[in-house]
Image 1 (cartoon, rainbow, N blue to C red):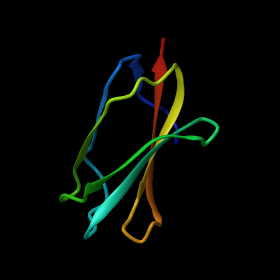
Image 2: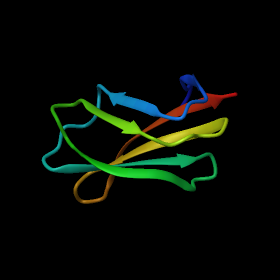
Image 3: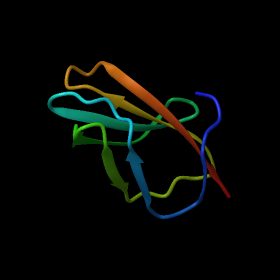
Image 4: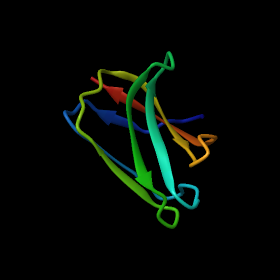
Length: 85
């Protein structure tokens, strides 16, 4: 965790992970709030270390974490971001 990027509130969020783990198959991507409650989830193909997703959802101000899970559902990586008002 550590320093997290900060973004403004928006109706849509585009996330790109340039250092995503390279695995065969689909990754599950999950966004949770600071309490660990799931706010959004989807799957995406693992493409040579880069993944882009478009989230059409409004996130209220606060801290969020993006968790990547491998095809075996084991956690691979976690990222954080803040939504500011």
